[in-house]
Image 1 (spheres, one colour):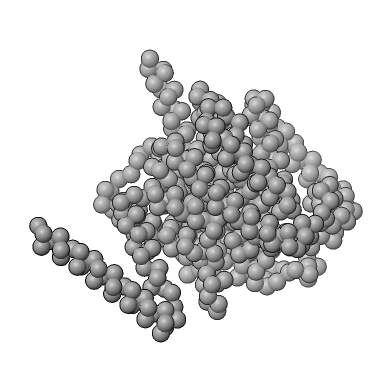
Image 2: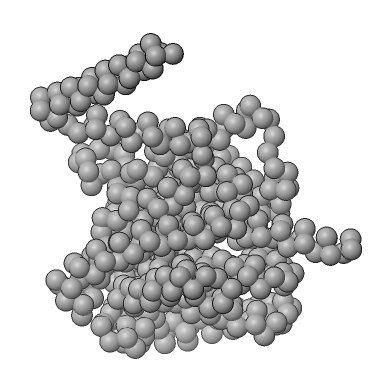
Length: 484
């Protein structure tokens, strides 16, 4: 026994010395710190095999702090977010390995309406990747979707069975986001908080611009508000949530992201509808009537919008009114340019589309001279199709758009029914705040598209599966009460 113990000690110190010598060689002679990352990589791999839940929560914390590879290494022909996307790819491989070994998964998730809609969404995306104008680009795009879903939808279903993990996920993402907020504010303060243009880039490189940054601020505000207001939580957690809510609200205001403000206002409207218990039929009639009126009076409305020449400003009301400026606001005009390109791309290939992830490579020839703006490019380096709805329409045809609409509808349907079914106040508030967070992004998705990035993909799919988990829990509770 003594010999074995001594051998282990000798082996440990031998490996440690060898690592230090190799690391010294790489740092001094090769001028690289890559080998220094080896202990962290091994720790992550060990965590993945021993405690997958810890690894997923680690990814949640790292997501707001992840950096694009092209900011770290120049001249690359590809890009990814570090360290989250390599970690998510490893999670995908482990998930497929476990699935092949067990040959089964939780049927409650596999047969859920949201999952069925998700199969259609992923299946059609894969099919149009094979018929794509750029198959390699499309298959990479599809694979990136898959690792988000493997980690935070399929494995997330197991993770969020414990209610505490929902709060841990929100707490870890929010706490890392607070660091980004302070970083952005430190830069914004140096340039002046009344500098609207500075608000567009001070969060870079953690967030590409103020639109994705604002989208996630709005996304987490409902759940932070829910935790703050529920008296059943510990006072310490409620205080931390209140402080985070205050920071997120101030950061949202200083982001000058009009789309994020609009999305939060839309979530407030949905909250009012749920509180007033307005039934679906009058809402549907109202929606169809509104669409019909817009179509009938489209010329008059367009003339009204073109008469608005308000530019972005530090004045809150002026900045809000600039949202409808389609005569001189470059940001609004560029969105119209990108949307018009997406529609023309759809008209040319209405069924199969051009292929997932190919919009940025194919849209340039579809730009009309009269629609181009001072910020127009031919490489989509200022954003993609600027819509989670028109993007799939151009890239995967009308069934691509339908698949995303069906998925969004299934998620909201499950959320509303779980909310009306829930009897426990905590679960009810958790469902409501999670659903309102998703509403903010589904509204924001009409003006921007970020689901292919880790910053948005991770929390979005996590919140989707949280609703699925809570939907099942409320169903089980109702069945138990019925059995009694």
